[in-house]
Structure formats: structure tokens, C-alpha cells
Image (cartoon, rainbow, N blue to C red):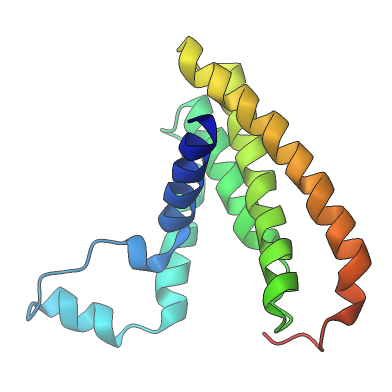
Amino acid sequence: MKRISLAIAACAFAAGCSPAAEAPAAAGTESARAAAAAPAGHMAADSMKMMEPTAGDSDATRGYKTAMSAMVKTMPAYVGDPDIDFMAQMRGHHEAAIAMARVELRAGEDAEAKALAQEVITAQQREIGIIDSWLARNAGNAPAAAH
């Protein structure tokens, strides 16, 4: 059950990072037409702006936003190999999950949430070790970077 909860949390986390997770404007409205015409970088810029800490944020919110922002800014380039891309991108997600879990341990109040945060840290650190080992053995087989 714990693995299922972690998997659901990881999917929700990944979905929240996706521009597709943004609520679409009503079809036919001016904002819908503007959203459709906006370049992809515009949506990415809006998403990045949402992740930047603001003066009104709580310490925990600043911590979560900082973790997400750092993840997006430091993700490695795709190389065109599905296995290497998966492993490298998952490593970045795991680092962000650990940073967010540390915020929960520091600022959270609910014992169940804090226990899950500790489980996330333990599991993701172990998985980062597996990923790093796999990448050390396989990353040399990657084609030239495809951005």
C-alpha cells in the first residue's frame, strides 16, 4: 500500500509540473484563443513564475517552490535514448521529492504526513543510488544530446 501511495504521489507530482495540468480556458473565449496562440515557452515561463517564492509565502511554501524551481532549472537535457532519458529525468524528480519531504519534516505538523515524508526520503535516496549506478554503466551508450 505504501508503494501505491508513493506511486500516486509521484504521478500527481509529475502532473503538476506539466503545462497540460493547467486548467484550460473555456472554448471559444478570448483567453482560450490567446492560450492556443501562445508559444510553448510562454506557458513554461508562467509555470516557472508560479514556482518562484514570493514575499507572502509561508516558509514551507517557499521551500516547496524552491525545490520545484530547482528541479526544473537543473533537469538534464534529453539525449534521445528512452532508458537514459527516463533514468536521468527520474533522478531530478527524486531530488526534488527529497527536498520537498525535508520541508515537510521541518515544517509539517501531521505525524502521518511526516512519516510519509521520511519514507519518501529513504526510498528516493535508495532509488537515486540505483539510478546513479545504472547511469554509470549505461550513459556512455547514449546518442548525441537531442534537445
